[in-house]
Image 1 (cartoon, rainbow, N blue to C red):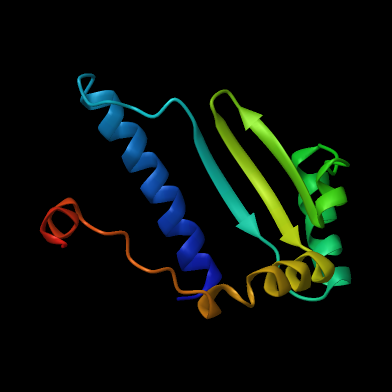
Image 2 (image 1 turned 180 degrees about the horizontal axis):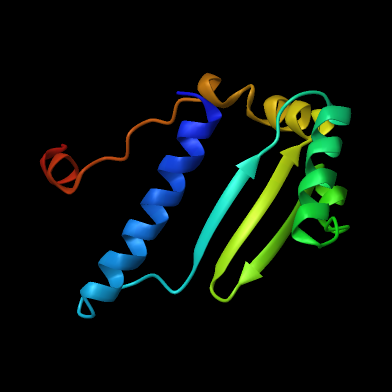
Length: 120
């Protein structure tokens, strides 16, 4: 699917959600909705894309997120948030390193109440 189709499908889905919620007042609605665009590529590509989106949104890059290797900008439209985010290479590498051992550790299953009662 090309980007134009994806964009049109997303807009249609959001409109359909709004129509559904408006037509069904007894249907529970979330308190908050977040839509996220993920930038990919090199760190320079990511920063360029997020800077471009921030300019379109007329907002700033969140300086606190850069501490963790995330580069993003967002805008709130009431309880709806649109965010553009990119995870920079150092943060991706750190995440991969922290998770590289996960499959190496296998916990023994906890004994069930039934098996503990029948033991011994």
